[in-house]
Amino acid sequence: MTVTLVLLLFLLVVGTPIAAAFALSVFLNADQLNIWLDSVASIPYDGISGFALLAIPLFILVGEIMNRGGLATSLAALADRAIGRIRAAFGYVMIVASAFLGAITGSSVATVAAIGATLGPEMVARGYPRGYVAALNAAAGLLGVLIPPSIPLIIYGSTVGVSITQLFLATIVPGIVMGLSLAVVHWFRSRRLLKDGVESRDDDQGIARMAGNSRGRAVAALFMPVLVLGGIYGGFFTPTEAAAAACLYGIIVVLLQKSLKPSGLVETFYVAVLPSAAILLIIAMTGILNRALVINQVPQELAVYMSGLFSDPLLFLLAVNLLLFVVGMFMETNAAVLLMGPLLAPSAVAFGIDPVHFAIVVVTNIEIGLLTPPLAANLYVAARANNVHLLEMLRHFGWFLGAAVFALALITYVPAFSLWYRIF
Image (cartoon, rainbow, N blue to C red; front, top):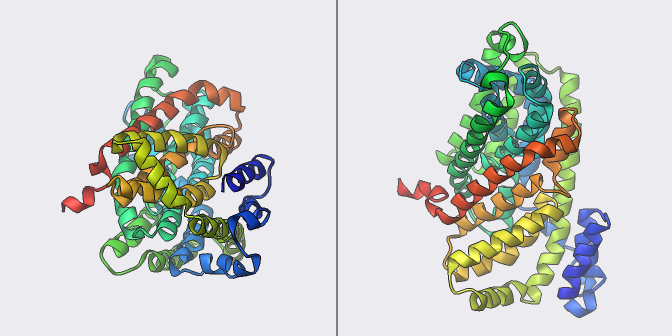
């Protein structure tokens, strides 16, 4: 099995498409894995035919509909109206708007792209260095996954067998912890980066000027997470049914507000298909590797090995975090969740760690990989959205990475942050 995992890493490093890398790592080593190739023909289809996974393309479609319908600008205007008089307010606006948008799209990269293009120029106009704006934009994008709904959490729950509804509940407080950690960094850094620690604000410019015109649109957008999360937690919808209801609601809103024409809606469906197909294809091909892992009892052997190596669950969690931090640097988020979730979950159970808490730790850690080169998708998207060189971002990036790691430590070692909902 070691040869298979080494081959997988090699294929990923040389740039093989992720889905192909997962499948080839098994196909090229099938004899040693005791896998008959004709027996795996149905695994890809079985892996993506589950009802829960239908939520992924539906939430991606929701995000595209609301983004193209002017949602990002509307949310930013509403946030600016609510907290715009606070000192260095627009950094907080970017964080809050990223959380709002993340509660609709479930995608970190989509949140970074939309918020960066909308708020980035306004922050630069208010005196922030462009590199700092891009670094904050990239870090705040993490809230796109930590604030439910979350596509990686849907993938983890479907693969490992943990309730997606419970995962959505569990990630609310960790998302708030991450947002507050970023806000503290902004509070500290803005006083050094801005002249006299104050934004150069013109009340007649930018986002502030649009607040009154977009308030109704923003309120309609804010009802989206209420519909999704309220429907799930109120017992009216499953996560997949909530995603379908959100799609219908989004279509009605953008058509009634005339923020998206019917022709634009058709294009939006097409655009949403591409990332949906890519994610589902990765899930399908990962199923082949997961079957090989199960047949060769790799998760069970790893659980026994980890139990012998560590006697304390706290040390085990530290080792897992270090491992996942490195994995996140080199693997795409969804692929890393699909590989590491089933591999590590049995070990966590052996140590008596709550499966829901462990899921939040795994996904949060792997998401931080969106900020750590060389893969670092959030950094590259933020650099493009804010029209800034990557090196200029890196001068400010370490502060936010440190805040994210600090939040991860709290989430890891204070299980109550993830299991808060069981108190009530």
